[in-house]
Image 1 (cartoon, rainbow, N blue to C red):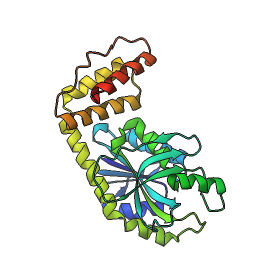
Image 2 (image 1 turned 135 degrees about the vertical axis):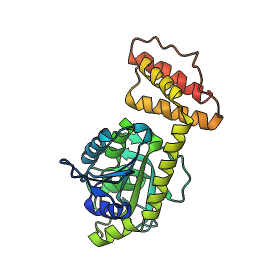
Image 3 (image 1 turned 90 degrees about the vertical axis):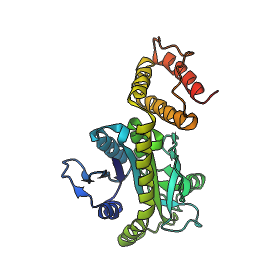
Image 4 (image 1 turned 60 degrees about the horizontal axis):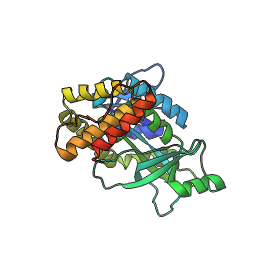
Length: 279
């Protein structure tokens, strides 16, 4: 299942049309689905995006077979980046908090990659501080950080993608509604490609980690009292380790699983990380 989060109906429309998604009549959000995909319209802002992402993923079963994508418009500081250019985001900064998030892009692609700054308001050239932040990050939006922080509670970073489509250069001039829909519609092949890569990764993960290995990792996570994010990180490292080495998972003989606190668990978890990466 691919879960797609968009802020606005105009951003959703081309995707709904392209994948023939149907309104499910949810009482809280506008949600559209087919057999393989679910799309939710969150509304503007990182808080709304976070709530909608949490709502959608909490309703989705079998998280091992789920990926999440945030698709939407963004501003670009660089005027050399043309209007309508799709950007695959490799770093997100929450401008309010300074927190940074890193989607793990494991698949090959031909898209522009870039860094995104998520702001609490629309940024224009008259906003000196906002423009300076945009200069540092390259691209700006109002939802990315909220989406990623929520999605990462359920999914590993390599299952989370953000596709942002440039709609302006921070000059305070917004495209007309039809023009916005058009540039998203023109990006459908790139969206298709990313979705295909996530589906392929989901299938390969199921094959790479068998049921016994998943149980083994779950037991480790429980013993070390790992947080949900740390648990995802553990599975992510195991997946990459097996792909890289084609070996069975390590035994972690240097790790103590008899711990009394999360602090001790975090210390032992660092040992696991070093073992996975051969350090």
